[in-house]
Length: 332
Length: 251
Image (tube, rainbow over all chains, first blue to last red; front, side):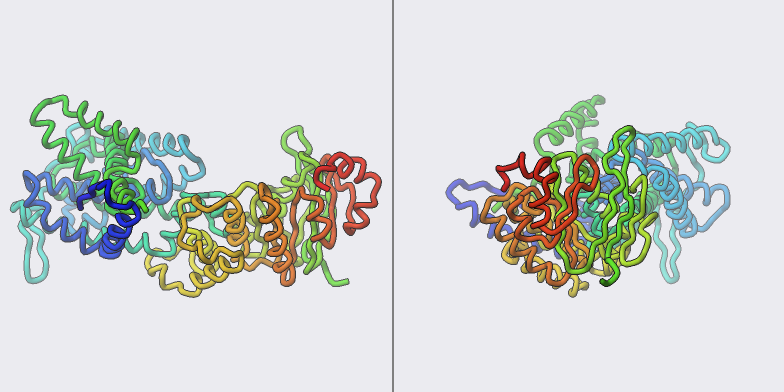
């Protein structure tokens, strides 16, 4: 989508012109994102990058449900991503579980941890909420570091390669990058559809109302704390799912996946793409990982460049890439 | 006389060392408009916050339609039939006017459904549209709440409370910051609403209160100074001394 600001064109006309496009984008958001995901490995420099975009895109979408739509800034979501990954890895390596069982277990444990962390954190607001989630997630990080006989400690969890997914009638070879990409894509697409349902649902309206005005939402008859907790758990489940996919993809769980750097990454990707928009977090993950891919070839200090770009966005384009495009298109 | 809809007994509120409200006792009957007046700091807001469940009283009891409201969480008040509007406009700024009212109406239908399409709750949407029309905002349904004019935001504020179809409607300075024309429209709206429900309002505009209310409560330093018809209140020498006398500008 190109947005040209032709000075001769009356602004109102421009708005009229883009309005149907925006309405179409919103209405067809699931099929459109599917299409974009299908072509992704062929337009990006490598299939590995495309898989990363899928996984981190899903993480950011899950994070955005809490941050962008419910208005809660969590710095502890690495826990759910890491828990999903570790549980899947441990289920396979320690218990010899089937890949599907391992994935379900990963999502379940992530959801359970989200329930506990959420129940403890939602009593607080703003910076205190961020700090409580951060502290709890660091607790999980150090537990994983200490329990090295289970988690591999500093070296991360290894030794659980899943090379083939068997279904009745067919199987997917995970050693083939293209097959692996599309297998993961199917899961991510289902998750996106789920998120789209949530956002369109009555519950989606309630979390937005809470983000907009918590006091009024309570006066309107909503149990704000419980609603926040449900949003927190849903968000944790999605991040956990991304974690299990990451474990299957890498066949290793780095300890870093539990570190608060990972939580920070989710905040950055979501803000970069546009918090509170459906496509934004995915666009943010794509932009961030592409920048990392390109700039890290030039210099080992690529984080300086990405960091600067991030600061520019926060200062001048707080709506993020996608949010800004939407705002330009909507301007009357 | 029939049983009161709302019965307040010896209700008080203390914030640390500050006593904001000292033992207020009053009964409120169905179909009346009652105004609560008093100088700044008289305890009107505290009283309102207790009636709407935002604050717990430190002393006393409150019974609504016969039920004790102690221990009822604030979000349940609107489900029991008490809705309020706010003095400082308290809306959902980045949602459309229609969505502001629709989400308030939805609380009576669906709160934790994450699967159905919300557009399917057609009756919720229609109720919101009807309520918007009732407060004169039918043509602003698609406008973001933050882009509405002040008077329109005040009307939206009322609509959010009204869509709950409350038995008791609490209006905290419904005409705050309004010009004479907008105030007249708001008075018309309140009179229309009063035909079917009980209304309590906090106001500063004396002329408006005296014309509109069936009954006036005067709070002063957290205490109930007087309780009577507008005529009685106007004639009350003590009220004149503490309130009416010093606010000629309002009269």
